[in-house]
Image 1: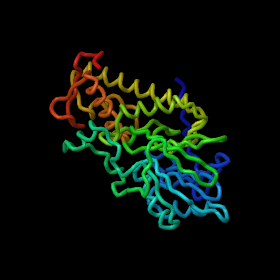
Image 2: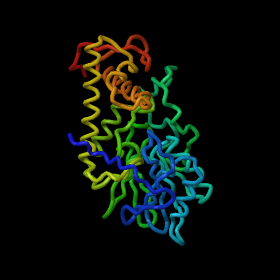
Image 3: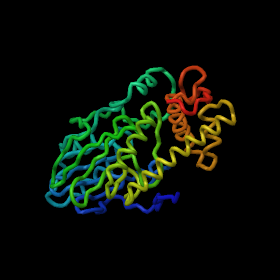
Image 4: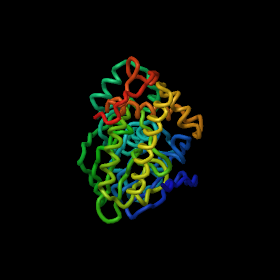
Length: 316
């Protein structure tokens, strides 16, 4: 399958770039191996502007957003796709400057499935939690299908858990519309799914839901606009199925293995700096295999457990 990712590192910081009649993008100056060129903040509408994902707690990004407003414009609402530190902390800074209310699905951990909640309560050490904005709490909660309308733009919330349990995408309705996908679908790389806050089964279901919508364009939390959403989702879903097949094959060969050992084998061609995140993806896949009865852990479920296949490939 052709690689659909646009990894052009070009980025403009400190100013807005217009992507569509009602959409402007301001890239945060927080590039890294996990954020690509930086977090994308979006200004939606005219006059009364909605800001989607104000980004990290960086006064420079807040200032860039405010300086990107046209004369006479104001920020009317702040929408947050999910509570990771590169997306949500800037909401408090922007609210202080504008008084605009913050909308999101809920605080960090909201929407977690019963299975993931039990895993979180198990006391196991999972790693990756440093990315969570545990202080985040919106002024207004949004559920699937809720809407906000300002500046001639109508945005519909789509609950799309998987990367994070409180993840929302926002569909901009009307001509020239598309979907602000946060980290569900990105333009430069596949998405990290890190249990227990991340849930591979929920992630795959969210991808399937978005594919069925048939949107014309995705505006992601990182990377360039996705002009072929259906093709991109098909690629990412196939990638996840391929990773699962690699994990199954590696377990079949080894007999049993930890997520870290599987990561070293499967992600041998990936920058070692990303192996910690990759191991959490592997663990997410293993949890899915366990839930389907295709694998089991030695002892309690945790990222350090040893896993083996059950020999029941058709288990439900």
